[in-house]
View 1: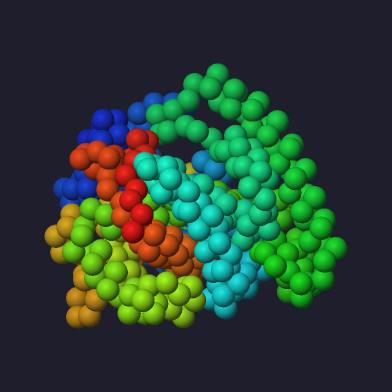
View 2: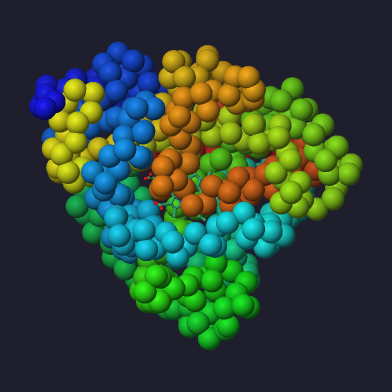
Length: 446
Ligand code: HEM
């Protein structure tokens, strides 16, 4: 029997630390100081006065992602954050309900299916980046957001017309709760809910029309993820209802595009800021892609080893998901303490990436840390958790990596970028990472 949580250390991190832009490092130092479990008193919003438990480090990751995963509910963690209005999807389901869904969705995310999505991804990317030269200065964070949303709308739901993608994006953003950790008076929340409910009616109508079209088209002719999922069957031969498909689509759109936006934007920024690293990536590209201009195939993308390491290191230092939320549903012990059912918890993924015990000189951008013989990500299982871990590892991990590669390859071929400001971009995040000032860059065609 562990000690009661009331005896666990309290973190001294303040609201200022949380908004500071280097929260993962500060949190990593806290874990070093007090151990892998600490209490954090909520600093504002409706839950002010309550406490959240922060867990950090590979052992904590292993506990939550693997050994005791059934004690940590995704539903209790994620549903309040992604909003009740979006519905239920893989990210916020638990147990049997989740397993049934995951088995039905897995086939749409196999590597084989990437062959289908990659040409489509490249088309969307080129459509967006081809306007950059004429514009002179672009905010690559905002551009990455437009690209990843367009890719998600096209690959997932088959929406291709720019006007329709735009409308979907506007409706969808109205659904996402826009509150930070210290958020939201009741009045803010009521205003959000009114707007979100109106947007949801229009969004539902749009997506239900697409669902009906896909149901009427034979499974063999499915061109997008939606076309596959409406025909998927569970072990009892049952398919998903329209309401279930809607919830999943909403959750996939939210889980898939903001994260990929952050990873793509940081990858482009760092390729610009680190010329020696960029040269390695460019040399590899020139060799593999016949002078640097052939279309990218899945096989060629897989062989872009230097780019792969670069993106992995970008994801370590600028993790798009900083902390994942869980609600404890069965008593569990960790680090000498007992977490009773009902405890709200956060697993600190980004802080783990800054722990010097697992990553040498963790603040340094060093893609070779992942190459043999160092292989720091393999040496300690569950140390690198950019995409989560265990059976609930991100379903979109291949999709996201190939998309970021396609964006990087397209931009490297067409342009030279230079940051408008000498100040590095400021990022912060409590769950997902945001870059409020964006990343404005000067663009010169090559
Ligand atoms: C750089 C991009 C991405 C990052 C860093 C990322 C990160 C993550 C992380 C950390 C988790 C685990 C969450 C948890 O344990 O609570 C997760 C789960 C998930 N991600 Fe991603 N993700 C990315 C892209 C995508 C894409 C492109 C899609 C879909 C097209 C996607 C769909 C999902 C879904 C559905 C889950 C829940 C899986 C489950 O519980 O079965 N993600 N992601």
